[in-house]
Image 1 (cartoon, rainbow, N blue to C red):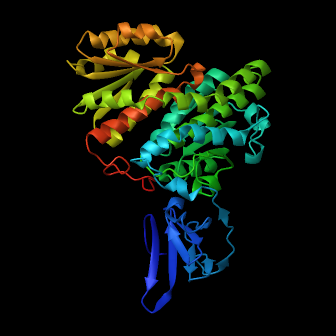
Image 2 (tube, rainbow, N blue to C red; image 1 turned 45 degrees about the vertical axis):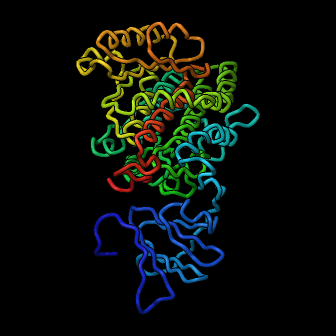
Image 3 (cartoon, rainbow, N blue to C red; image 1 turned 120 degrees about the vertical axis):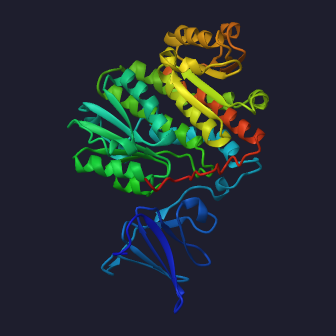
Length: 459
C-alpha cells in the first residue's frame, strides 16, 4: 500500500492463508459486511443487500481482515481499529426490478415515493427541521454566498438550485462542476456554505472539492443518498436523500429527491433571513408537499411519450431550449437522452439560439421547448417559432392550462400545475421517459449504457 500510486479498492487472497480475505482502499469506495453465512466486501451497498444490512466503511489506507465469522480493522501501521457499524434500512426488494422491464423504468415510477420519503424526514407539523443534521438557523442567517458543487445530474440540481435559492433568499449562488471547482483556485467568501451534491457520496471530483473547501475553512453541507459514504462522513453537515438504492446508471429518483432537499433548504434559509414571511413559507411548504402526487400524475400517461419516441428513433440531433429554471431542467433532459439513447442532444438557454446555435437547425430537427415559468413563457415561445420557421419539429412541455401552445408546437406534453419554483420536479418526468423509450426503441442496454459507471470514483 505504501508503494502503490493512484486510486484503488482491492480484495486480496493469499495462497498460504486461504481462510482469510484482506481488503484495502485509497479514494475508491469499499464496504465490508457480515452476513448470516460469512463476511463480504463490495464497492456499494446494493451488491450485498440480500446478505446483510450491517456494513462498515473503510477509510483511506485502512485494512480489513475478514474470516468466515470475524472482521478486524487496522491502520497502515497495523494497529487495530474500532469501526462503527452502519445499519442500512433499504429494502432488499428495492434492489430488484419488481416486474419492470428495466431498473430505470422502475426508478422513474418510484419518484413519488422517493420524494415523499425525503420530505417526511425533514417536515414536521409543516415546519422544516434540519436539527438532526446540525445545520443551524444561525449559520443560514449569516451566509454571504452559497456554492453548489457537483457532477452530472447532481450539477443540474445545483443549476436549478441557483435559480430557486437566489429568488427565495437573495443570497448570491454559484454553481460549479466539481472537476472545475478544484482546479480554478476558487475565491471563496468567508461567510459562505459549500453544498456538495452526490447520489453515491463517493464521487471522486466532488470529494476532492469538499476537501478543498474544508482546507479553506468553509463549512460543507453534503446532500447524499448513501448513509456513511465518504462525502457524508467528511461533510460538516449532511442532509440525506431517502431515494433507496438506485441501480440504473442514469439517475432519476435520486435527482428528484435531491431537488426536494434543495427546495427545503431554500425555504428554510429564506424564512430565517426574513426574505419571506410565515404565510409565504407555509404556502411554499404546502406546494412542496403536493409534489409526490403531482409527479405521480405526470407518470399516468407514458404511452404518449412512448409513441412519440418511436417516431424519433433515428434522430441525429435534438435540442432542448428554455429560459431560467427551464434551462436547468433542459440540461438534465439532454443528459438523459445522451447517456442512454446515444442521440446527440444539447440544452441551450433559449435566448442564446440566435448567437450561433440556430444555424444547426434544419428540416426535421427535433427541438424540445420547456415552458414552466409564466414570466418567460412568451419569450420562449418566440424562440420556438424562430426554430420552426427554419424547419424544426417542435415538442413543447408546459403546465396544464397552457393549451394555446398547440397553435405553435407539433407535439404538446402537459404536466400538473405547480409552484413555478418547483416546476423541475414535474417537468423532468416526460424528459426521463423520452430518454428511456428512445433507448428501448433502439434496442440498447438502458440500465448500463456504454462507457459509464454508476459511481464515478476516478477523475
